[in-house]
Image 1 (spheres, helix red, strand yellow):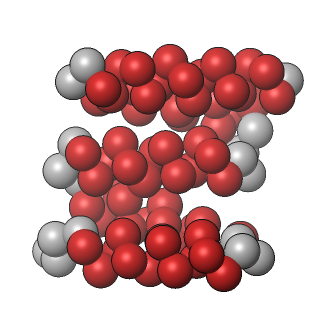
Image 2 (spheres, rainbow, N blue to C red; image 1 turned 45 degrees about the vertical axis):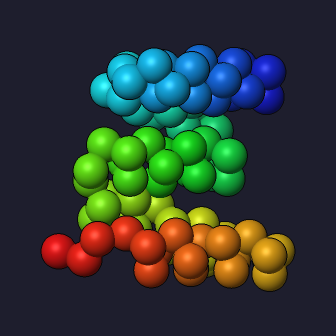
Length: 88
């Protein structure tokens, strides 16, 4: 199961890097069905939403990550990303 999630994440990043954000988001969503709490997939979703010019959805994902994370470095990163995103 963990391997499947990592594969979903890798393929999603590859699609996003090639400008195919919709396909990347679909793969991340499929991965989240396998592992709904995966911080790697949630972070991937947040970044994909940011790249797709969907800042509200990105902020929602980053806030979910903030709530779950115990790592202060990651929390600082998530707060920074939220601040960097365009406001509605």
